[in-house]
Image 1 (cartoon, rainbow, N blue to C red):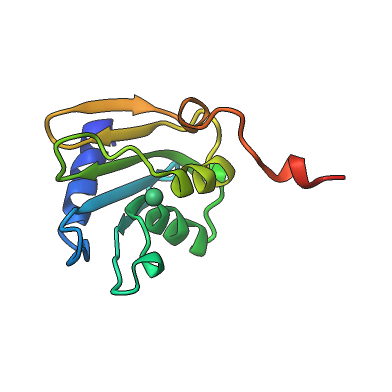
Image 2: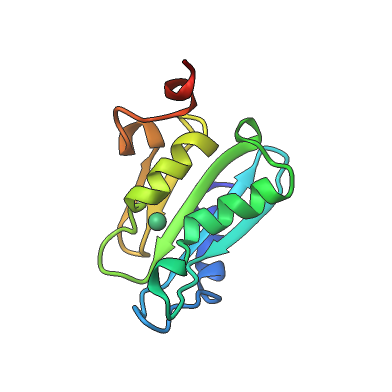
Length: 133
Ligand code: ZN
């Protein structure tokens, strides 16, 4: 599966986003090295902090099925916004632990496109090694 196919799957996923408050829809699709894919969408809630972002729901779906960082080929994150859906701070923290540093993170809104990785998105990371005393 090439990057455009993965982006297309993320756009398919986006149709299931639950975003009645922001009306900002996000879809994500995580591709494993064995070809499996895991979709995720943003899911909002009337209690706003209880919602979850699309990329986190895709990564959590993968991990819930036994996937670990070395199994992951790439993740695409798309939105219907005017700008690229760069992961929020919380998602960057999660991705810094659950993806490899150089795993491609592909962002698109259908007009703009960027490939990056968590090392670029989150410098000076706080991680498990910081907890080892
Ligand atoms: Zn987020």
